[in-house]
Image (tube, rainbow, N blue to C red; front, side):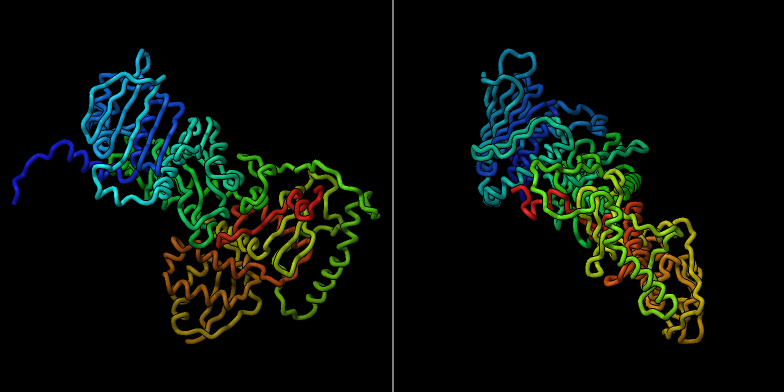
Length: 619
């Protein structure tokens, strides 16, 4: 066995480079973080061959004195911390003092800098870890670091690099993270002599649009919450704007991009009530807290952190995001981001702006009742309304197979006026016009046409009402005039006998009629039109599977979602105009009504601009 000996510094740096400089993007991250720590206002990045041939980062920061240039390329040399106390409250992005030394050991590196107040810029070069003497350089201000031929002296490591296109994509991801974290910075990215990104100093919302696109910017929710020394700011994407991967999820802790399981779990929990299946949300979140409350010295790449009070951070993030997502009521955001950018002002959801066409079309020679549009509307649909009333009257005197309408309308005189006289009187989802194939409700809004999936929308409305009632321990029940008996196995009978109180808590009352027979005596009033026997069987099966205690805690939302699905109005169910309008008004007043319980959108808008384009008006 060989003797124990100290490794030479150059070999130590190359070993460290294996941890810190995994690929060109890792080196770019270290260099850009140094520029940010130097107080730069603009950063320019030049790449060649995905960064494997050239990485050049130039900034206008504070610069480095001539006497410290060579020291900056030495291992464990830094100006950012000086004691253990500083390490416990790191406020800068870099602090280890090994980034430049590691990069210099596996590349040909030159460092040029002009410190503030200095008359001359200076440059030092490092070749295979050997640092040369400083010499004069031409540089107006700031610092420029140039890295050439990464891993030229470690062929075994160089062969693991991917194609230039793949390596550039990773470098671009690093550039985007910096761009999102600091919208006040002017940034430029050039690859193989071509400018790929040029971003000016701008507002946060404008930077989101520039980096993540119009679709995200038009539907994002702005978040600003603070509590107990924690602050959350940023933007959360609409639940209907989701992706299969996590490539558009950005979390910054005290300005540092991180991937943390606590944060990811909290965000996922906040979205689970409105996100479809395994889709991933889009968000850019900034978490600020006392530097002493978070340990950033966990991983060499500094992308992982450890919170001192992780549970408190989790609760704060979950409740903050959940509160923001609860405000996504139908009519306040453009679902799927399909509304043009001109229709919704970023940062002010629900502000509609009717796009005035810049052209005029010749009038059609048709006799239009312009004097009384409301009367015309009533005449157009009056027959349907009268037919609906007659059908309801017939159903009340005979046994009808179809369910009773879900909505109980308030006692008010019927009026034929359904559309307002002025545009200012329109509610966000407008007024119902008709029902399409028993599935969709068509409504006229101030800015175009609204299409509503009536089952998905009603399912969300019922679900939110069930949650509110259960949280308040005041679930209204509907006793059945005639109890509904049904055959059941012994496990179902035992479940009813053992968990009668739990069933009563969620609005059900069941009785045991025999060893193999049960009866439903009462159901939740919100589900009075559901199939009581089918609902009871489903509920008993869920309780047997997960247990009564878990059913009312961690599985509560799943239980209520299943109940709401049973109680929601079904497809091919004919609705009257008052019922359609009642559904629209309920949607506008219900939290998260933009998505159903499974994360699918509940409504869609076609603006007047989009309709005009379909018919080529003005072209």
